[in-house]
Length: 331
Image (cartoon, rainbow, N blue to C red):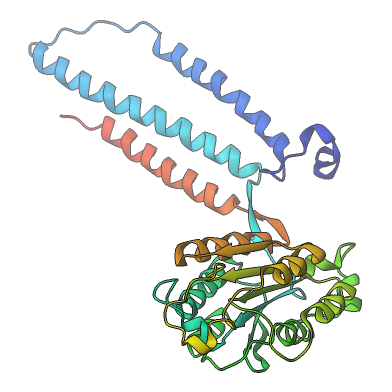
């Protein structure tokens, strides 16, 4: 019978597994009317020598009974909600999906146009990202400068990954293409992801941060073609300075290398279905990573909350019984 009722379209709900049980809420007004009718019955008058004292006692009892009735109705309301099996949506990550975080660790990341410097701001933002994704989401870490290295393979041990972020160090060079390829190698293959759903790119994401342009290694556009073949989405983030002025904290001989290649980074994002962001402050960088933490959530699952409502109903019922007992005490 329950299966039949749940199959009817009219009963479907995103918030209750058995929404048809909510029809029981219609009984509450009838119950309230019945209690009111009982209170309306006439009572025989009684003479009492201490009329003022009696008036005070009756007032106290009446107030207690009001609270008793209110808590009783609230307990009944919560009980019916619990019977309807309430649920709420929670972000979930597929156990075979993953996100690779690729970070530029070239020496130009010590530039201080973003406080305290680009490197520290980027590390803090990455940790914010990890804090905001579901606990079950697999996240990996790749760093690149003179060469690219997979620091942490895909893992749901977020504390371990954040510790690895804290221990990142810088080097000379910027090989964006190698960073892309190393990130791609750490993600599930296209064949694996095609078994997960109709949109394999939803289950593999790269978030790449850089403050400069490519010098050596794999051509970023060649790496882009491989990423597109694998149907992986890439979000790119640029940090630092776009103009021609001097960059604080960077020696003159490295100034040109620290100039950001917006065209290439934008192209990588647009051709893979990702987003491109350029930021010039630590606050903006943290916001971008926080927004991306929501973008890579692949689904929202329903978690039943019946126990929470049942416990609340029980607590309110005990409160109602306590108030009822209090109203019977003789003052």
